[in-house]
Image (cartoon, rainbow, N blue to C red; front, side, top):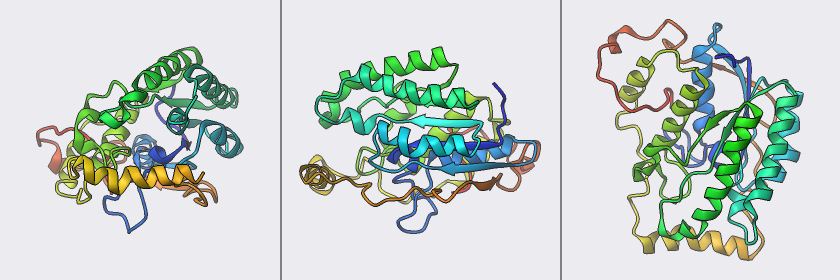
Length: 288
């Protein structure tokens, strides 16, 4: 597998859309791990640029990703596709993990047959009591996803096994989506797994630039009662009415590919020398 790609397209739901990654973003606009990964891919590319589109939309289920997002990735000639799906399916009553994984396998096979490399993600391990009933279902699904990655020659992004995600500060106030800190950590892990993290000093610079930047609330901010009132109750109310947070939401890059440039000083061989001797921090992704 190459360590640089020309065109990267991200598929998925709210996690890949970037929900709750508000660091240095205007109100109502999210950055996200996939957008941050695109910048790291640009930094590892000889030209310092990569074409990128984030087609992920909150609340999307696996079949919707297959119908709405995958064909565009193929049409736009993506040579790298990230696929992180299944969370919205697994929360639905009666979801059968093995059957769901077969749908994911179909998406992966289509992308691979079109000539794309695939970054394939598992679901994360539930950390809060309210989600523990889903643990066995998610575990079974993740086992199948790991098997798909091995059979199809994908790069695996194993969220279940990431110790950094055990830190409550990696999770947003709603306890379902990643915080900005969590998104940056996930982007770095993805880049490392792809072999696209060209210089570990990028982590150092990123940590320095983000000191104090995460002003948004994280999962440590609310009591269980406050969380239930502010987040769980509205979610249940939408479900009861057959509505979803993603109704009417359009992908941030529905209009087509955009060019992502590496942040100044981060293209291959151009790291800022004044940060070279700083102690290493735990990573996150630069610019935002």
